[in-house]
Image 1: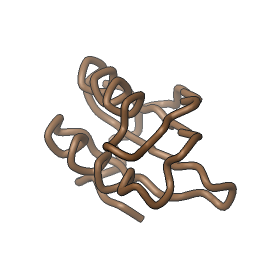
Image 2: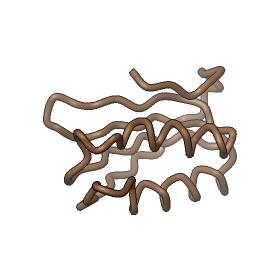
Image 3: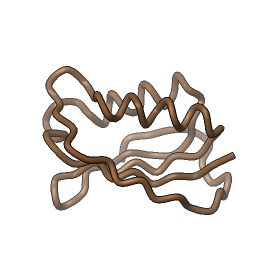
Image 4: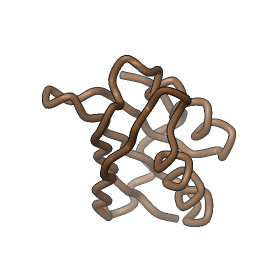
Length: 89
């Protein structure tokens, strides 16, 4: 099991990016949350199986139709089994 914090920058606000992430994370049975940051990025804190997290990161690289992802910062964290669902904050 793995826990990762993603910080996604580019055109990621106003394009339904968080809803896109929530749908993909739920499909992949991942837990955690996504939220907008004050500096107009999207943060994702996710826990689950490594292969599913890798798939989510690939979805994040593309994003929804109107998004333009410029960068994804990936920070590994200690797995905590902290979440029951995946939600948008």
